[in-house]
Length: 201
Ligand code: SF4
Ligand code: SF4
Image 1 (cartoon, rainbow, N blue to C red):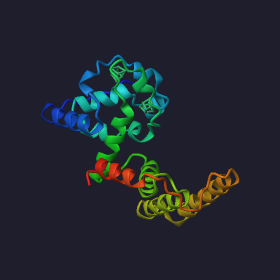
Image 2: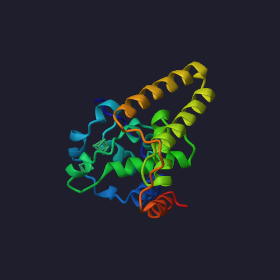
Image 3: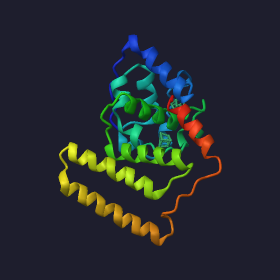
Image 4: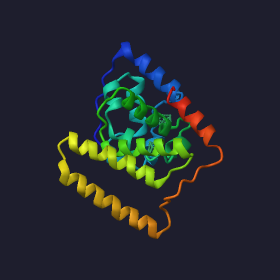
């Protein structure tokens, strides 16, 4: 993987690192760049950014690089990095924090469909305490269609997306993994409270 040059912005380094550390609950300053996390990350090669590099960007205050890289969107939250880390730093919590910051700042996500998937998942789980596939797909498809219309993909791209979604829905139905009925968990109020707290509401 090619090495990247990181820009050090000393005036903002502290504030970015502090914000991400506070919101993610991870002690970024404990990272001594041993790269044990990098060796196990399943998406590091694909995204061009490994967990150690992401942490370095944040600690050095390179806001632009930290908020514009594919690891933030393609991290699968497998927690391999955190279990390997001698300092128990869980990068999945850092990528989740950076996703929220990107949304709050209305920045263009590098992977719009993943961003839509993420928003649809959070919305659906906050309503029912678990994903309702019907609602999830409706939110995801609506957001993706709006993206296609505003970003020039057009009607053709929307139809292709819907076709894919319908095929996926049919396959899930065959496997009994697609629930049409509303199925709430018992502690949905608690989930909503946690969701609102995480969203700063
Ligand atoms: S394993 Fe932990 S200490 Fe080592 S580089 Fe990764 S985050 Fe930093
Ligand atoms: S949790 Fe994310 S950053 Fe960590 S190893 Fe898994 S995919 Fe990579």
